[in-house]
Length: 143
Image 1 (cartoon, helix red, strand yellow):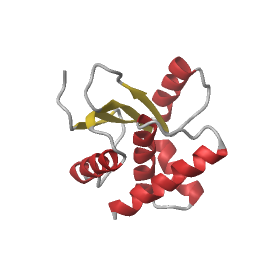
Image 2: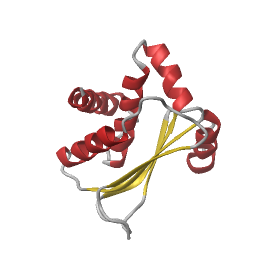
Image 3: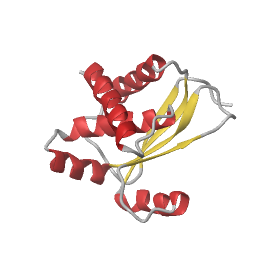
Image 4: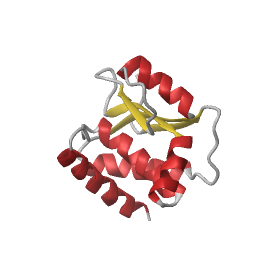
């Protein structure tokens, strides 16, 4: 069993310049702790649209592009543990569409994935609004 507080970042055939892993790692740990949970083993995997689409089709039976998909590890790990897959091309495109800084959008998507692992849902307007409020709160702590 892996030890708690183990957060890794992996880049699958994509790159993101200027990414401070230690700062984001601590931010994620802080968010998990503030939510009343214990950080466990988390892997944040940055990939392209094609890779995330394959996961979306295979595991969620959705044939659409998305920016983030999460998979909790289950009871074999201590603390909040799972994989967060993020499409960097989708993040960049969303940043342009929402007229926000690409790094800001990336951090929003990272915390969005972590919030999903914490049990937050965005399947209806009310839940989506609550989740966006949490995202905004945690983004404010990153500054």
